[in-house]
Image (cartoon, rainbow, N blue to C red; front, side):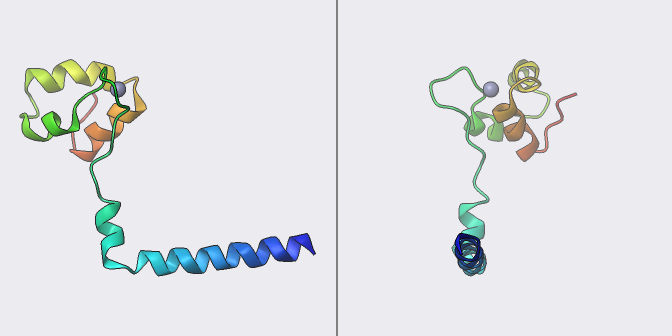
Length: 83
Ligand SMILES: [Zn+2]
């Protein structure tokens, strides 16, 4: 019984998700720039968006991004290599 209920719930959730996916603003909301944890110590997505790929800023934060998943995600979002 509980198995059936869980199955039904999952089905409903999936239908709702599919409904969300076709909303035009869903893609916009989920195509936002990746966020880094608050409080500093991480690359600034806003700055990374503006500086040239070969700038000192990028080189400086690339080392950090190699071992920081949040910052690596931002680098990849802007198409910047971590090598
Ligand atoms: Zn970081």
